[in-house]
Amino acid sequence: MKLRKDKDILRFLGIGLVVVLLGATMLIFQTHSKAVSFLGGGLILGGLIMFVMALYAATKPKTDLIVDERVVRINEKAGYNAGWIVLLSVTVLFWADKIWALNIELEGMYWTTLFVGTYSWLLLRWYYNKRSEI
Image (cartoon, rainbow, N blue to C red):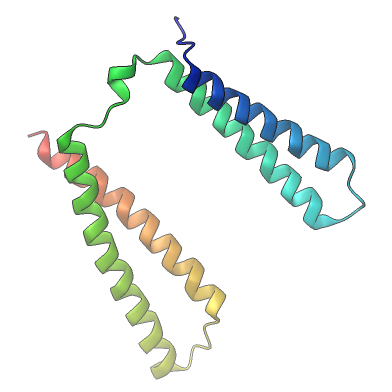
């Protein structure tokens, strides 16, 4: 397996390693705070994900990572429709809370909206990608 070693890949690998080291340093020198340990663990996880992403990109030729017009159009269409789904879900949550007195907190609405938006975009992107291959 041949790895590319251009400056973009090396920079991304370096940032990932620095983030992991920063998270490990936070965990080593913590003052028994749960917030610091949570943040340190998150930095380690994020740095490892960045490192794996850079390794994955390094195994691909540079031309494979360029997005063509079809993929751009699929992302635009999926984002547009996911935006309408999010707007509809927020409206339904708001009115359901008003009508049935569900006492939904703002944080609950936020996480529900984030979940609906992310997964609707992913599903619509998958659907439009499969539909256009036929």
